[in-house]
Length: 384
Image 1 (cartoon, rainbow, N blue to C red):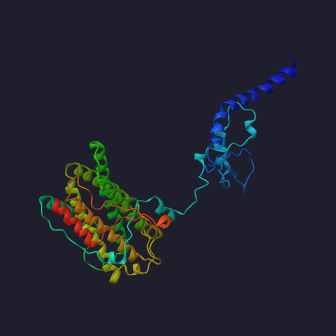
Image 2: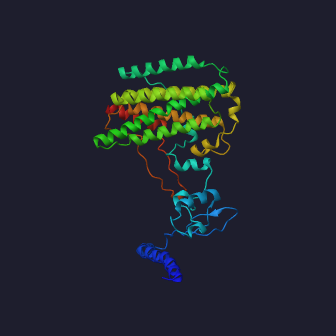
Image 3: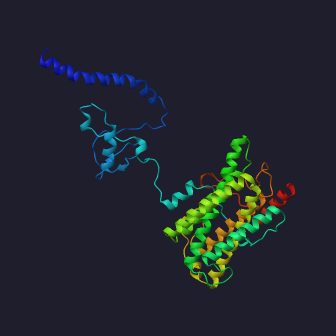
């Protein structure tokens, strides 16, 4: 065979393979082309044209999303066909999952927060001012165990941290932030434990949950947002984080085992815990009036808080304390009510009506007023 024939045969083989590959992909192409026009096809760009020093990536019908040249080349190197002599001169676009979605508009972290958190409460001025520091009377042995165990833990915590309850102007701003941050790391645990336990119970028994899981998970998310809000004012050090790690491990396992044995005891315990949280935030008002936190009345609230609670323009840290105190009061009433219910009774706080205001309406947690909460508690006690 002559050298010319050998050369023609060598160049024909890649073309034959390409035709064979094309014949296999024709049904797929036909299926894609038969789709409706409102579903855009993915246009792959196999050129080396640069935009502002960057390589364009895969796009749909919109503009290319810039990607750094090093990342694009690294991703393209993994996608080059093995044994293709022409692959070295081509730039292959990375897989779409390796690049940002070109149709998704970028948002700042503070703005994007409200898109992936659960429903959060939005209170009126009347609801914020109606919050009171209440104490539930102990009636059963479960109430007494929950109350005394909680107050024993609080006394130890106050003594270790040097907190003087009821004394104005003694606690500094840094001490207040340390206390609030630490308490929120603990307060966010019971909701997740209860929601997880109820979820597993529903799966295990193959029964409905009647709204308990959603309410508990919303509470856990809400308490976590309290923590993230206060951390915008202070970043704890290594020793503080170690203490949080120890407290979290102890509290989570204790509440998990207790919830498996006696769920009502845990709900009552958390109800008394939330009573102390409301009392703590009431104490901060005394320091804001004539103590070490007077500047909080005109200090702007963090952006994460303004977006999460959809606070009014010009909101201050005093307004932030008011909405967090209202959250704690709601958690207090919810847990005291659930402690009076049986495991299979519907959750009176789990009823939610979808908004009807169109695209501008945002989901809102079913926030009950004080009379409505009192009525729900009376019905629960009567059923119990």
